[in-house]
Length: 234
View 1: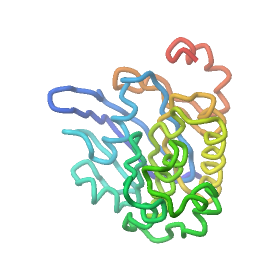
View 2: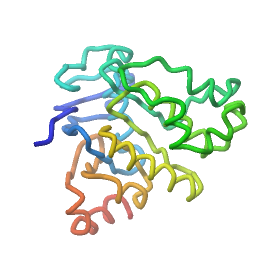
View 3: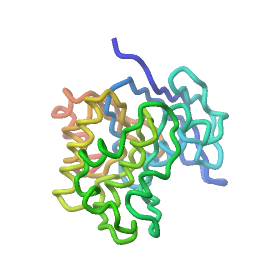
């Protein structure tokens, strides 16, 4: 039996007066890769931010490994073993690649060593002395993901990590996600690149106007293609 790691029940979220999420329900089991699909502005990124407490206000229930987190501040939520990789990456441009990797504090035991990181992302080993601002977009994205892996987080929230990257980098990130899954990590991805997300995920949630309108497993993907084409244009 799979063990539930994350459950959202009737989660609403606001930025100021803007009501973005309208009762999100989803669950993620340990060791799963779950992808949130939807058009831009549908509420997928806000769902990740609501899990982390990075919205103006949220209501409902956010259970993380048995702990109710809806009233906790973001730093307390991170220490429940969650690593968040935002779309904007947040690389420190004046620090070297390796200094960026050494920067984040641990949130749980078992974080990956530099050697393990460099084995997974050889590009970062080659560029370890380069300033973060001199890295290519693909290298910065690898660094953003790798930095989260250093913290010991067991649940990763990845926001559009393949966006705008060369196919060879996207393939490397896909291999990394498969390796992390084999290591027992749990991953929730927001992805616009359906071809990247489809072969990686165990389950999918389709979000529209701040609500989950469809949920299905990887085995149902082919049967859901007409719906996905209508909703997402894929």
